[in-house]
Length: 293
Image (tube, rainbow, N blue to C red):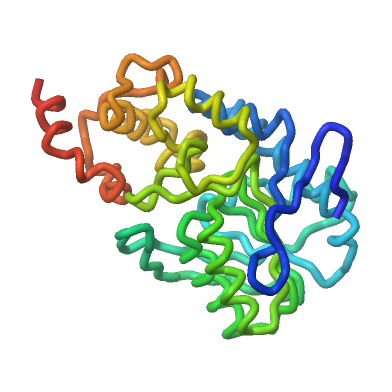
């Protein structure tokens, strides 16, 4: 692990037998991503690639093996652009395995995950995964399916926004199977909101630098708004859905006039927000009044 790249640093916040090996990575690209909820479309994609290139650069020495591949969790793993970042930073190709997952339910910070599709044509003893880590259920489900077909010794999990509870869950799953797990998180190890969606700098369990907490407090008037929204990746993969979810967030938090959520667009059809219903259903009575006016 290269801890200091000049423009990017990685700090170990956990390790040893009782804790997952979690590094928080700090650089301008991650600040641009996690402190701009209005970032969408092409500029969002470009910023994500900048962030991933920093992640890969920190790990370049450890990734110098032919026995490595990506496990892409569809569809949001696409925005990490891991293969492109690997080629740019190391000049090497990154083979890709794929798995489609579906979140069937979210409750009390946990989730039930199904995996209706897999393509494991590039097996490797070391996997690299790019994905948001909330409860950790998605990645553990993906790894469980992979292990049904291939052995695994090591996994690197790169997450622009990840929780410590999710890392612990994944690390425990890996430890029981003799797999070494390393996590690189953007700016913080977040606490997970009660709705299972919110990853906020203001959550009491978030581990991060004090200046990020102050910045988030100022940005959202003390509300614990998620740094990445409720459907990360929709910023470029489904921009209209992202804008509509942002409107629901703004209304839920009482921030409808906030510059920090000005990408918001009032939905005229709620059907495409159904997968995120658990994030806002506690506020539905009030939101229903808003949509009827």
